[in-house]
Amino acid sequence: MKPEAQPWTGRAPGRVNLIGEHVDYLGGRVLPCAVDRFTTARGRPAAAWEVESGVPGGLRYVRAIGERLDAGPQHVELESTVPPGAGLSSSAALLVSVAAGLRPDLDGAEAALLCQAAEQSATGVMVGVMDQFASALGRAGQALLLDCGSLAYRHVPFPAALVIAVIDSGVERNLPGTPYNLRRREAEAGMPKRLRHVESELARVDAFVAALERGEPDLAALGRLLLESHASLRHDFEVSTPAVDALVERACSHPGCLGARIMGAGFGGSLLALLEAGREPGFEAAVGRPVLYCQTADGAFVR
Image (cartoon, rainbow, N blue to C red; front, side):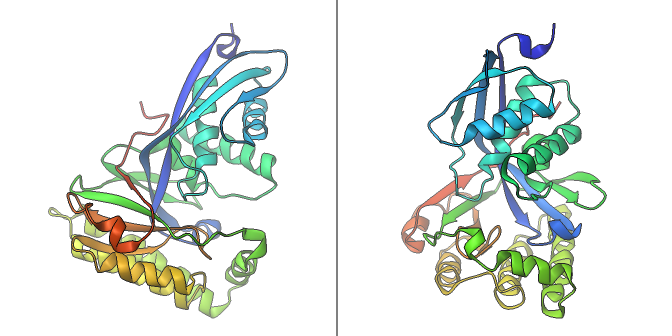
């Protein structure tokens, strides 16, 4: 009997990319981690594909990954603590949760690639592989160093003494209405200013990993690299905004904040900050925006 012929449950986490922004689609190295916000999918066979969810739009994702897995129609109920639009890749968490429920026997990397293809099919957007790999293969207490060209990956220890803070900038973005596609084309075409960001960001990924892997993690270096990344995204890749720049400054003025930067595609959205554990009180008031605090978590296909 096929697994999907019986009721099933799958759960997958959201993710945060610690460093390595706007390099994934050029085959570069990124350092995401899975975080402790989850999407749970519960399914059973049905006459047609159906989704019950408080968040609209899930049906096209569920059907796309189900069809990639050669599953018959399912009635799927979705519950999630991964807020949409917060930069935690709720879409990857949804897809990977369904894949984990329908095919828990899959290799994690294979599942990630199937979920990437399903998202591309569902949305028409040529998304990269980082989000799905992190949701499938992240580990609690570790980040995932992923080469987006070769798909080679390894885990890197992440200090329990740090808290990942995701700050809602309040600057809404609609990527088709921003210069995002132009920035990507400029980078792919080798525009010197854009390539300067890519080359320096790849060096920062390596330096970030080195700082984590020292006998005693170099927390000051982590903060400095986040700020250098933001400066590069602001000046060389030009995807920040004045409101986001001001939030980075306010975040870094809070005691115990190591550093902060814009996160994701840019032009608004969310920011990432790293805080010393226990320094959360007063941080949200300091930045004046909602903050989601996260820890690392296991991915859906961790054995």
